[in-house]
Image (tube, helix red, strand yellow):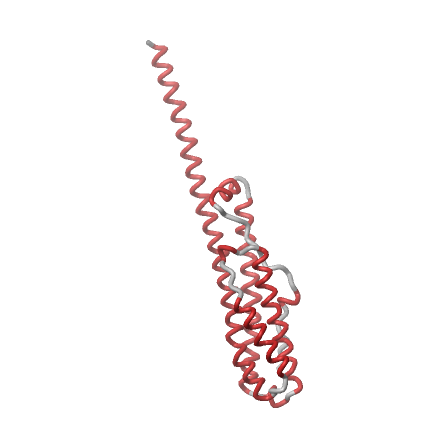
Length: 203
């Protein structure tokens, strides 16, 4: 009789231990999952900031082109270059949920080409004193310069958020859950001098 009680008591103790271990694993799993969701949201929010900054620049370009055209209409190649580069850059939309290295590189390249085209457009103004003195042109230059600074800040914020996210999902034991729940490594902006160079703005 006592043996049966001992076995029953032992079985109950083992069950409690197993239950406690399972509970600990469940709590850890929930905590780890929520932590990865948090850093992923921070990264996608930062990506939205990048897109917003680039969109702000794209919105300034039509007015800038029109002002330049009023003083330097025969600079057709330069003006068309900016318009075409803007069209290409704004046609590429990258969803934060599908931010692959290839897509980010394509986005970065298009934005870099637009930066270069804007640089050439600003350089054209050097040959036109009346254009340089135009109040609208000067205001647009200032806005453009401020926007380029915002773009660089947004890119840096995004890269930092992505690094935090990538480290979080790659650390053990988080990496075990990351694979199960589809938390994939995100791409960062690469250091590309041509893409990050703001147009030269002289006052």
